[in-house]
Length: 306
Image (cartoon, rainbow, N blue to C red; front, top):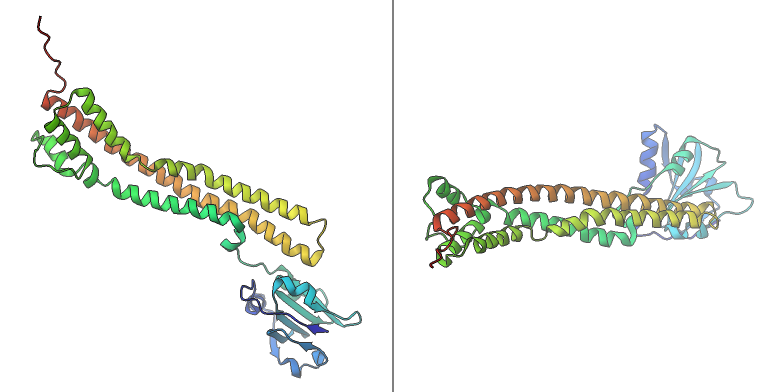
């Protein structure tokens, strides 16, 4: 038998993953140098990572290979007493193998889910995540009381000492007050300007609505794509090749839905929170506008002379 595996820099499993599962299951094993193991003395191994172990009294060799080359590079002679078991980029060669517990643990070893298994759908989902973080952070900053309805304006309204000509234009309430003082608009014009200030507070919220609706749909599209990939490969793939395609398809189907929902749920919560803040600020501005109309006489109708 010849082993021509190549170490993959982006490998799925490490040898320690399998050995750790053996330790968790209280399965005894010990490392044996391949050269000192008579069971494998006539075989040549060129894999960069290949180690010999004695597991439950069974001599075995564990190899780490590039997953795409496992099936084609590990070849056993017809009369060989070795039996090969494949799991992603790991190969377990066992002398006189039976259905032992350590073999079952090897076959059942599952790779951890990573974002890379989401395929091309990770890109639109990443854009949705960036939009969610940016909009929530930017609106949370822009809707602060100091930029919308500062405490000095609220105190002035409660005490009746308004409008104040010394106020600046930093907040929406101050800008509305300055327009009422300097331009002396009509009631309709002042109300329209206050509505513009309230509308400006909602800037970017439609993007959160798009993310809330779009991220789960992208996840569902990934799920459908993964399932199609699984079912389309089942009739034509053998056991070794089909297992890899099956795991990739299932990972794609699961991950895209999980990521899509994980993005949409915070976006929904953030949208509800921001809407609540805007409603509160809008009520304060309506109060300010009504008091300004009373104070400046914008609600008085002009006298019509005969």
